[in-house]
Image 1: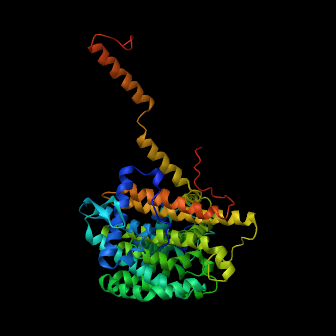
Image 2 (image 1 turned 180 degrees about the vertical axis):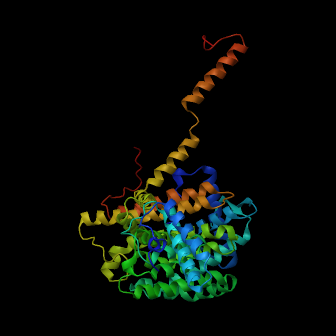
Length: 197
Length: 295
């Protein structure tokens, strides 16, 4: 498959608005043409458009260097398969992409599959590679930081804190409440605990 | 499983501890009822986790009644009424014990071999019954043993690869009979618990295996000097933490109807305490017996 930006006739990395305008312009041209050549071109145009939209929804930074000719369209399919839980199919598709074409997204998806399978060390390595290849991407960074945090046992302290927070009834606020209640009780009986209220 | 998965008593409520003991006792009873007093010798706290999780997800609640224990008549223990769950877990115990003994038979140590050979006929008899009553569990464990042998024959399998067979078997045992919506979470809890135990056991046996030249997924690691040992312990701790976080996330996604505190205690504090005990061996922290430190 050709570079989708080339198919649409716009510079690589063009903003989405421009992509949509270019798509509309070409689509109208091909739709009015009944020849089989135009039908083929229309299909190519649809694929190119889909692949750009899919990529931009996962990562806002779409750099030319990270782009590989065959990857864009395939990733959306792989992502859909992962979401449906068809990990074997997704892995076969992913492994089918030659090593020279593997970008940060590839390693991120591979990490996701491995994590779902429970192969956590391999998942961690893949997330680390994804983060190294594209440090500006937030999704990769979050996945990688989560691994680091879990390795250090961060989840344990979080859980302990939330647990002790639940049991802790003697906060400052409830102390004040108790005092006010006591004061009210005293006043009922004619006495006074806190003279100012 | 090898006694690594148990509750951490100091952090447990008394009520939870009583129930946990009761679940353990009920499993012991099921083993005696379905098999023989010999089978009760194979009881370990590890399988109590499988019972706890099953009870926790069961549609209907369960009742406990105080009964006397034949081995300790002075003390009454709580016996749970959910017979099906304990019967299934008792079959699973026998199946895993049978394959463990078969595995020991190929071990290099003479006494281990002898012990296994002596006990095998009796266990094989029990295994025949377990196989008939729990065919799915039997298949899961048998497949795992085959795959494990294949993996160990590879030149240098990664830890993920090496841990996969036993983890997968436990994952399958956890999902048997579960409702469709719960299966994913249960599989993950079982899979990752199996993985945790495998990694911990491999780390525990590393020094022995290096001496004997037996298979160990960490045999490439250097533990010749105290600094290297500390490094090794930290690496293992990282792996275990990563696994444990996965278990706890799966536990949170599970629809638990009861015994959440017990499950969390086992999977958070219990296995951590066991891991620290094992890793302490490599960190030059001599364990002081009968001494408790309050900081």
